Length: 131
Length: 131
DNA sequence: GCGTGATTACTCGGATACAAGATGTCCGAGTTTGAGCGG
DNA sequence: CCGCTCAAACTCGGACATCTTGTATCCGAGTAATCACGC
Image (cartoon, rainbow over all chains, first blue to last red; front, side, top):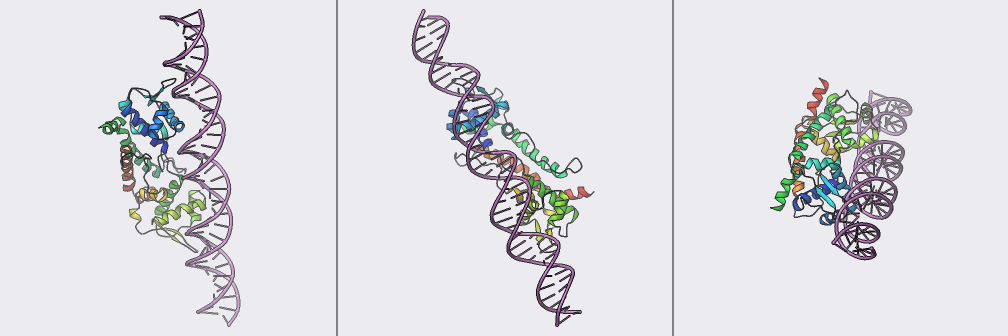
């Protein structure tokens, strides 16, 4: 049970965008260099973030990725969901009478975690990052 | 980011032990049959639970697995940790100045989840299961 | 009836196999910018 | 100076390769209870 490295990349990439370049497009090349990871792999993650509506892609020369307007609202959970998907962490594989008590407990715990991740916005961190 | 099926098996196996046979050994054969999973694979999970000190194995004829004495204290977290390991869900792969702000947030969220899983005992569920 | 050995019913652990997912690379296609060039 | 073309700098998306992990099986070794048999 571990978050994938892809999530790690995505979170750091988003933090960089918010902190360093909130309004101008940044190329994958530069972003990958700053983070020290492979361009092509990072681009896959960015594509997911685009599909999730968190960032915007601008093709052509001087293109790159740019934050969407509502950057204030972007939470950790948004980014994690964009990469990992939104399906629940736990799924009971037995078929006992509709609702599994075990599953209810685990999902309840999961919601607690999501609550924290949802309330924490990436912009908060960017301020700390700078200051 | 998903709990493995092995965790699902282990939780259900523990619930069965607590609810149906709190003091006598149950063979893997029977347990696997009740849950409808493979014996050999389930036995691997039970081995982990033994190593974690949650249950006891009795070899030889009429042997099997039995709960440890302190069954009241066994929480969801204990079982999950036994199977999944205790390492954190998130580990920052970059080396920026010791402490990663992102990692702190995610680990904080993780702790919230663990809090719920820790406070929920398997015996609680067994009572609901019966009643 | 009692000890001894064989059988049976278990767990334990290692070796192996297979599938899926994470990670990473490569390349061709489309798109926009900007430079160069001819009128 | 204007417009056209072409190259460069990008993203996009699919195909592919590799490695790890989860899932699962098989088998031999060890262990404890029980049964059978002979004294």
